[in-house]
Length: 127
Length: 127
DNA sequence: CGGTTAATTAGCTGATTGGTATATTATAGG
DNA sequence: CCTATAATATACCAATCAGCTAATTAACCG
Image 1 (cartoon, rainbow over the protein chains, first blue to last red):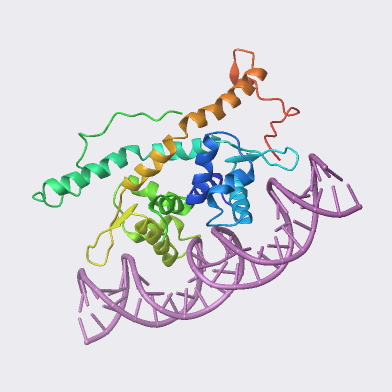
Image 2: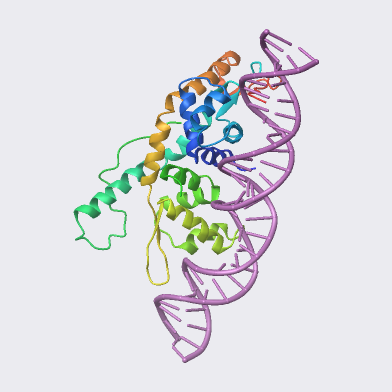
């Protein structure tokens, strides 16, 4: 069994699963309802499997109502993932700056030291 | 070949790879330097493989300096991932609010540090 | 009861992943 | 040239993943 963060990222690493989550953002839905947009590409058991991955990751909760299983979104695990990413926010912007610098000037050579302090957005991490 | 976002999330879904990225946040490093903390658990080719995953995801760029391959972090792909998550921010907080409600029902005292949740009333979120 | 609908389980496949050991390439330098 | 170092390539293995079909469970309803 992997760590929680890996499980979360792993669950997100599939377009079908992300689409399911997006659908659940608009509200509860049964398995069949969730599967409907994919039934041209994939069978119902396939969707069930994806749902199980999401369930194991804690991103989806399956209820029980007669023969239906109303699924609801639980975004709590995303909080940890977002927090992990937050640490890289400054680097995201730095990467874009570096690309911009490359496109603008190729004159300056070998500045191996960290050389982009000016565009660092003062964005703190919220706990 | 998967879409970019899946590739990014997939690359992040491994603690070794995340540790490599964390190490690269502190600056450039060669493959051996990156591998050093893991050599008790895994061999050098193993680390090379992880690096290749990160490289394919565009998160790491390998340079060339004599027989060394200085690796640098490129957080740009994280931007898309963060943007995707941003859509769920309100849902994350909704989840936490639900948790907050739970905490409010059991912590009335002002000194919050000593009031641990009652273990008999365990928070079994789902089975 | 029997039939229908909702969903899961089981069993099978092929592809991918994560790891290994070993061999190979490439470069530095005595 | 020879050797040591850095890193990758190759080949192999076990485990997991994503998908299918077919069978099964579970609940409702006529």
